[in-house]
Amino acid sequence: MTRAVFLDRDGTLVDELGFLRDAATLRLLPGAAEGVRLFNRAGWRTVLVTNQSGIARGLLDEDDLCAVHARLEQALARADARLDLLLHCPHHPSAGRGLLRQSCACRKPEPGMLLDAARRLELDLAQSWIVGDSARDLEAGRRAELAGGVLVLTGKGRDELAALAPAERARVLSAPDLPAAARLILQGK
Ligand SMILES: [Mg+2]
Ligand SMILES: [Zn+2]
Image 1 (spheres, rainbow, N blue to C red):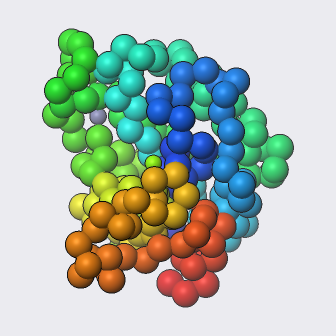
Image 2 (cartoon, protein in one colour; image 1 turned 45 degrees about the vertical axis):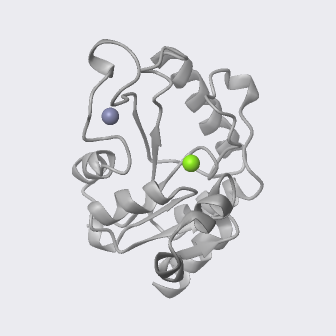
């Protein structure tokens, strides 16, 4: 069985730009490729899990997202870093149209994308981690019964940390950015 790190996209790997539709505007955060590479070299699977309700809202479509993710993979490849699987949730519970407007099992904090990846890649969830800039990333990790999660203080991470109740804040593992989170996870745990 294989270990994985689940990685949020916006605010964790790339600049938070609202709804990223145009691949040309994609920017890796400083250290993002290094962080992914650290997991690659340690033999962990790397799985992108991203909520993309902009699709339900009609702000972008699956082709736009495909182009954005192709660009992301190219940018990582130039730095010798690789994602093993990229998953997204196109739904929203109350916004948007047709079948995309639903309370699905994949929108984080639901754990559906993590469970799906575990089936596809035969992952050991109990030894896997999640890294994201949002409390709902960490909650998805809890619901999937991962070993743990790290809140990165890039993107909206600082605001998310400040918004937690004090007891919760004391329990949360945080790191300044993705490479720091990777070192934390790969060293200690
Ligand atoms: Mg995020
Ligand atoms: Zn969904």
